[in-house]
Length: 171
Image 1: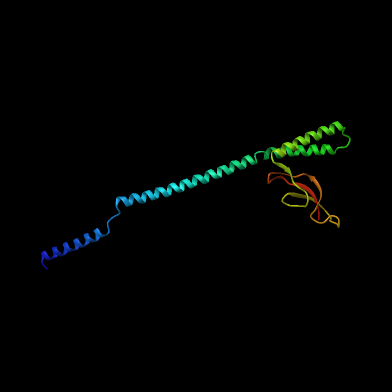
Image 2: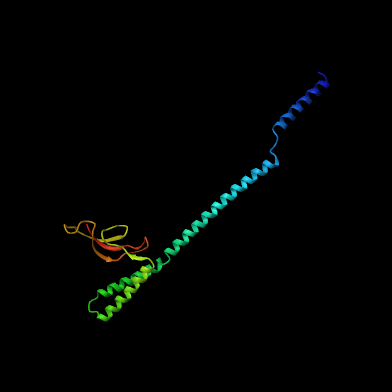
């Protein structure tokens, strides 16, 4: 093989390679810009959705805080209300003193009701609402799992239990 033939073959190979390169061109600037635009749009949509979720969670938290804002105060007032009820059970109080204690008790109960605090119902024993501190034997008149006596009233704020009722249960 002569040198000329070798050069011709090399040229043919180079031309064939160039044709292959021309057939698979690199991505154009427009395609790259479109890909970047799609990427930015996806990032924007994700960030927007995340912001909406953050706002929704903050709003729910704010509503919850507003709804239960008086929880700590109610927990501190309940022992005073219990003491007023015990004071009313004392014998030998004059009618004026008894009436005064009842008025204070009623005003506390009304203030608590306005904040959403209500007494826990004591129809039948519910371990989610009542704390059994003692049991007594059940009989025909008093079936098992009924409340024999309420030792301390329970209270809840909306649907949240502040304090369970302390009860004696038939068992």
